[in-house]
Image 1 (cartoon, rainbow, N blue to C red):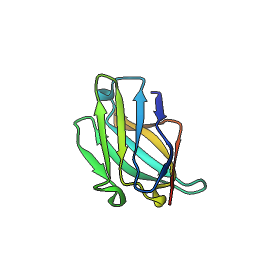
Image 2 (cartoon, helix red, strand yellow):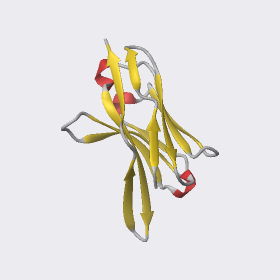
Image 3 (tube, rainbow, N blue to C red):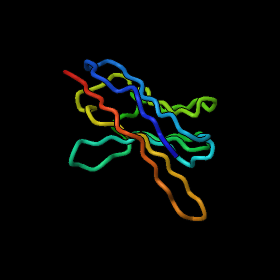
Image 4 (cartoon, rainbow, N blue to C red):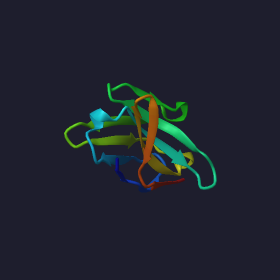
Length: 118
C-alpha cells in the first residue's frame, strides 16, 4: 500500500488547511486510515482516524477544530484543519492499518509539514 500525503504549509493562527492522503488501493480494503503528527525526535501521536465503516475518532486537542473525511471514488482521506493554533505545528503523517489473518500491517505515507505562526 502506498500513501501520498499532501496539503501542508504555512498558515497564520486561526487559519485553515486541508491535508490529503491518497491511497494506491481501495480505501474500503483498509481497516483504519489515520493522521498522526510528530515533532522530530519525539513519538507520533494520533490526530484522527476513520475506519472502513466510516467511524471516526479524534484526539481531544483537535476535537471541534479538525474533521477527517474520505472520498471513496478517489481513494483519498482528508483532514480539514480549522482554527489552527501554533501548537498544531508538526509534521503530519498518513497511516493505513490493515489486519489480515490476525496480523496487523502498518503503512505510512511521507510526512507533510504544517507550520502555524502566531
